[in-house]
Image (cartoon, rainbow, N blue to C red; front, side, top):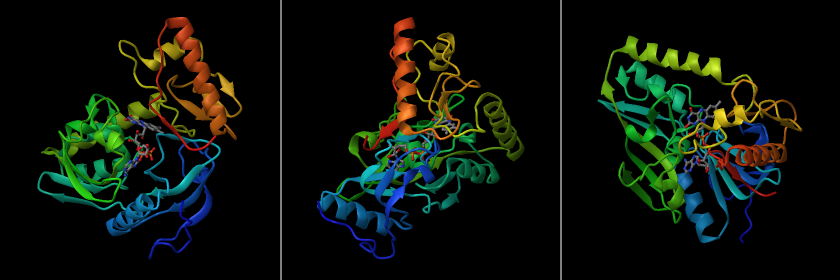
Length: 298
Ligand SMILES: Cc1cc2nc3c(=O)[nH]c(=O)nc-3n(C[C@H](O)[C@H](O)[C@H](O)COP(=O)(O)OP(=O)(O)OC[C@H]3O[C@@H](n4cnc5c(N)ncnc54)[C@H](O)[C@@H]3O)c2cc1C
């Protein structure tokens, strides 16, 4: 594997051994060997191509709101795309760069009286993470509104994928299978009424604040919805709310969340996840699969 240096890529500063706990929503995770915040598509393309050609592991993150980075950190180079956050509107089409916050994107849509992404008003991820995960809430899904996305292939080639090619499913998209990097997404929205759109977004945010432990670090719903069940209800019925290992705790407010109540580590999170999975399987015969991505070195 080639060795990187801090000034390897023109105009991009590489931080060495940078703790990822500074950036993750759970406030856990070890260091990235190297971490960079590129600002342009050309920079991302150069980095993707270089790391591909030199077999340097590359990991791309957005807002790190659906992740547990293990305590050993991440090998190779990590890119966080939050500096690429331009949002533009042309008629009914809204294009957001991968690092734009989904929340900010919904606000721009609202301010242009464009309807369709109200459901995402409180999803704390980036557009890249939302396309990768097909993020959804309150009956809405990213797949219903994305017209196309610009991606880089693992070799660094630019491609435009339309909605069908993105092959969206429940918390799934082709980006995952193809190990692509999302650069932007274009949403096809419908003209609406500003007041109605705002009321809908405010209502969803109030419902979220009432139900979710937003006052503590977490990674959202930890488990996917098992067919025929709700993960949160199974966890609640298993009496697991409040179950704690170190600083990671099954939220007492929302059973589907695991919150960091102190100096929680990724190992604490992993131990709570395992215990919840084993207990729910033993009590109800349902295997809970994680929605949150667990990545990095032990
Ligand atoms: C309080 C809270 C509430 C939440 N509520 C919801 C909800 O209602 N609905 C929902 O669906 N999710 C929810 N989430 C989870 C999360 O916000 C979403 O999954 C979001 O889409 C993740 O985006 P991100 O930018 O944070 O992705 P990250 O966590 O940074 O990354 C997630 C995955 O996407 C990949 N990825 C990120 N950016 C890119 C890119 N540009 N190109 C390629 N791959 C990329 C990463 O490699 C990683 O595998 C919630 C999380 C929290 C903390």
